Length: 167
Length: 293
Image (tube, rainbow over all chains, first blue to last red; front, side, top):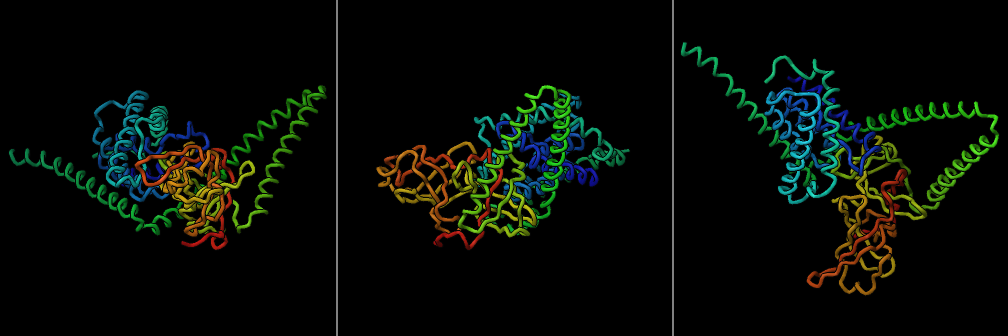
């Protein structure tokens, strides 16, 4: 499990750096897909809640260093997302297109809800998504479109990202 | 038999409990971190973390630029080959040359403008290039290619020159060895002490998180209402000692007057078009000409 978490965290950080340096140049309406979230969704769904939440925590913590986000912001939201997606492990057959699209779109909406709760709990000291604005829905669409491609790419690393003993 | 049945059913709830305990522990840790960081207790830890990633982003930018240049070179070669085949059409060739000359002339004009601005700046400054943006759509920071090694320090003001105007860009909030993170004026957490260039009424300019949206200037005395016009320039006041005095922030685009409020609010159109921003100047501390409060 620790190997899986380690590799997944490395992949998520690389995705975060790519989001920061390359994807920002091709942003659509100033919005970029959250590749690191998509990777976390895949790892959590394939490995279960324990791996998902630890990967979410470790990668979220490191992502906080790359961003203007307060320390713990991504760690908290991604721990919860990793855990929730992990609880769904094995519920549905992971096909090539439809389920990755639904998982990634759903995870983005869950992220927005968690961030709204954090915004409320911290007295509006952190930013939040506006559910009526285009930004959130463009990100949902971008993540849904990118989901099947990222999942297909991650399946190439099945040996290191999927341990034999699963929780 | 009963004992065996108990043993085989035993481990499942324990593992489930472990997952729950770990989940609660991780949530508590990250929640505590968020609590402390929003109160600014862990700034040093953030700097160490930021420094760890410093350079990686620059390297990726370098590789991407190099790949981009290679692709462009290949395209350029292919285009040149086609032109070579059509050399008989001299007129087209001359047109192409003329077009290239116009491009170079335009680039030359742009660079001269930047150089002229750099030479005319009264503050000591460090020129820098934007190499990355915040990986999270909710945050608006961007990363420049200069850090501690080049003399950048936290809380240095960042300005830019665009279309003949010197405009305020933001503030350095985190510094790595060769990279720094800048919080733009339109960020939620940005607050700039400002004043109207003509009437000299003061206020606080804050952002709304959207680079295309207006900035908001609050806490302006109500009696300023009759002296403020649409299009009036708003500049930094220099109070607080962070931002240099007299840097343009924006122009008045909307005046909001509410009888029941104790102060006036105006919306500003930023002087800088952040979508076109490529080069910035970081103002060295102690040379800002700012007044300390």
